[in-house]
Image (cartoon, rainbow over all chains, first blue to last red; front, side, top):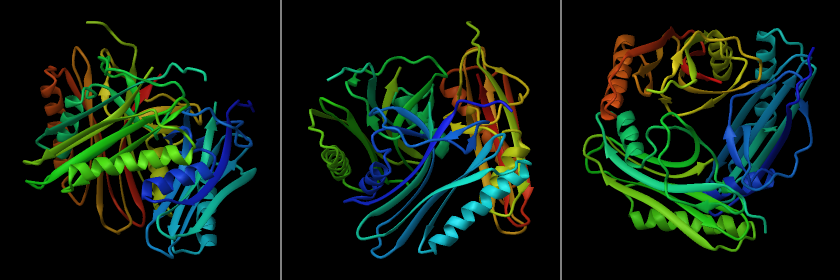
Length: 152
Length: 152
Length: 152
């Protein structure tokens, strides 16, 4: 088994804002990834990926990520976003899932089931599953995000 | 204050085409960004970003951008796309906004309000707001784009 | 004419899965691009691009691609995804197209017409058009993908 040098962080955030865009931006700030340029990618972890604490980024950095995002402007809506990352002794997989007015536990367990299936299909034995999830009851414009962030 | 080396350009375009995809492609050509591979990113300007003239690209270059895009195939529709970039002595923010059959001034002022709010939330004092917007009345298949393009 | 060093591969896949996400993931695996991180880009081929066999990727690689993707969870739906890549002695263009319950030949010929138009608009004389398409009749959750993958 070779160890890669990829490090990823897993984070989530939630917020209100005066508009849908600003609520999304505020949720990214709450997650600690609001000051960077996010490039969304699909969802594999290279062999030997380490999951580490979210670092402090330089404003305007270009950063790859898997992003789960949900928003609503209906007062009282329960919005959910979750990412689930599964690691093995080889490579790993990431799943994003979101929901509106669903049981947050269902949204989370669905993500876990999907990432387990992805690992199973590839013949990968799961070592660890790391989850970040966020739920929020909307006041005016609400947003939730959950993300796996790829670090250089 | 450290000065970064990031340069960005701001541009917009509009066009008709025989299909939705071709109208979009023609609008990108009209904006001067039709011959490159666009990778869309979220919306921060690194510290010390300079806003410069759109350069001539090499065909097929991979280029990061923030992209506002609207299209319609209903004759007479007024479609609008706008990007607003705010700079400070530190880093900056970009907003995209679009509209169908809305007052173009409202679509533009909404973008300005949103980018002002983003700067305010981050405690950044605005030095300059640069806007690119495009509006188009649809004949058959119409498209408008506005973009902040990140240069190497 | 200068020859670039960009190489691209063209591929497609189809699959069922227990969820929409897993069907999509399985279709990517079927296409040979399931173990990498896909970053979607718009659709130009640099001058001198060579179309080559899909290589074996290292798991978790970051790879740029143009991706056509369709899915459905209605039993009996016919889903289609196609990419059409046109080359010239200069640069080239790529089009993606998808369909649900449409004649696969129409989805394909539409893609070809669109890429021909893109080349025509740019004054490029077509040397070759390479197509990858995939069609699938849905059982539970079905997905089809077709992709032009940019290689380093």
